Length: 123
Length: 112
Image (cartoon, rainbow over all chains, first blue to last red; front, side, top):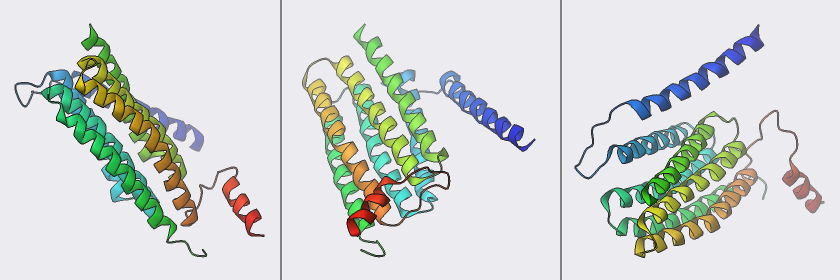
């Protein structure tokens, strides 16, 4: 009985994910500015959902390592966000911001890893 | 035509991104979360940048996007490895149902 309930939870979660994706694809989002096509505004919407997931894990991670992983993931997602921005606005320097953000995120992740290593109990 | 191919690459990248972030929420352990997010999100972002290259063509923006892809593919695994090592040294436990822990055995052997 309990095992059947577990499978039921899995199927409900899958149906929920597919319903959310269908809602994102079908729901008509009004474009904020004149240069935004509706496809690119849907891209921004999906990336915003990813940011929300990362911020959830950043807010209630049980250990500090979880928060470090969430910050690293957020830095890589912002690079993709800048790439989509450079397509939708047609300006080149958003890609420069993406390169600089990737470098800074790498250095930040290394610093967080060093900070985690310094908190060992026996070394 | 090139815009349609680029948009297909962007859709593939966005789906990789959102599945990686679902893995970041749903998986039970630090190491499992790190594995899911590093692979999925790095591949997804590289696919978005490749779509930018296909749409913009081999101009200044396309070359910069290619440079960003190379830089991201070089640095993201290094950062993930450093984070995993830091988490293990910091004393984060593995999940209960994990099978083996080779790094712990290696450090024990080197200490003796």
